[in-house]
Length: 594
Image 1 (cartoon, rainbow, N blue to C red):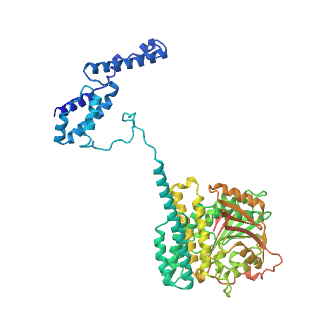
Image 2 (tube, rainbow, N blue to C red; image 1 turned 120 degrees about the vertical axis):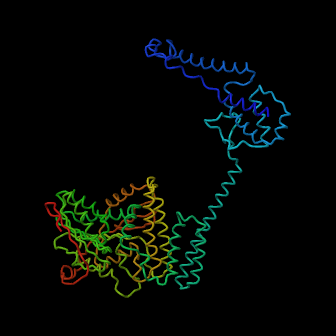
């Protein structure tokens, strides 16, 4: 065991070799002595000579240590001592774990121990077959180890890169094939549902679940297909698809998801901006104006209009806002709370303001006298994604709610009617047709949500907003796929169909103009997605993703050639109704009265 003791002794000496201790504080030159030395710490010479003296001092110190090592009989330099110390540590570990017979055989080989570097390296190579040093060795030199001049990391070989690339292409092709097969399965399942073959539809749903495991459901067609598979399963396995309770959820949940959808993408911002611009132009020159909002929600659209009216030349008009919304399930007056916030904003910008809330479960439950339209005031009717809920099947002979609502709306003789609707055709009578249309429409919509995110929206809060916006769209998908009859509310129709319907009802189109087109295009610069685009179609504007229109905005006014209904149908309150209302007014002295 002589070799082990020798290694331990040398290791102890090397590890205990201390650097020269700093001079005691008393031996350091005082500030006055340094002043006599000059501005440099190495004497009264120049800076260059001072650094030269320091370097020569360090070199002489290293030379002295090398001389001591040579005098002691070791052929090693002071610059190699750290490498030798680390090698000795590894050697000691190797010796401690090597078998006795191997050590005995190693004793028979004699090396020159004065050459420390060669001796330690040869010992390590001799003991390597018996035991590797414990712990992982560094794969490359670090700041804590001595670099090995013979170490060069090998770059990936061409054949290795080719294998990796081929594997990646193969996985992409397999996933693409699975996605294509998943789309075919969706269409086959929808066809089976239309033909009433529930057994075949159920078998296909099992195949679709398996296909979903082979695609990425985090984005793209995999995510959209997952929502449509879920909707088909709801329709196939539910006892009755005429009920929309499990699909629609509560009104409060809808408002939360609506708000997140507003924040996640520009579609609702575009809708509010275009409607406000048309209303502002129609109110020009009027001192008393009245806005009727078919879906108040949180009132997100109206702060911008109130501020714009406050800046109008000649002073702001007296603004009345009537907001229609669903009754609150918990008994609180949610419409009144929104009115209070808007009244406070109007007071702060010195706009005379009055608010009236009309709670109605459905828009066709509202009667015109509930809106309290006053003769002589300019009236604007605003509908954002609401009129399609009043439609029925195209072949249904019964009168649709849209007809009665458009009838009394025209009777109000509005100065402007703003209509924003999805640019889609989801009201086809055949289930397979509207399923196919919905699949392609929402694939584009989800693609815009993913591609339109800016870099700042990678934070957790923005990701949660996007997820909630996707749930908002999922509710629409479920309603289109799962529900029939009066329960199916998402009956989107294209702009051309709306133009024909509104024209028959007695409304005349108002050209939005090139100014609105330019302002809408500027609005999109707030979003990083370059795929959004605004198009003008016969005086109307559409917002889409990569040339696919997804939402349309149009403006209308009452046609002077159409006779209005009798006044008693508009302003009489003799008809009893169960729709409650709340009123908030802001008087000229900026106080709020209820």
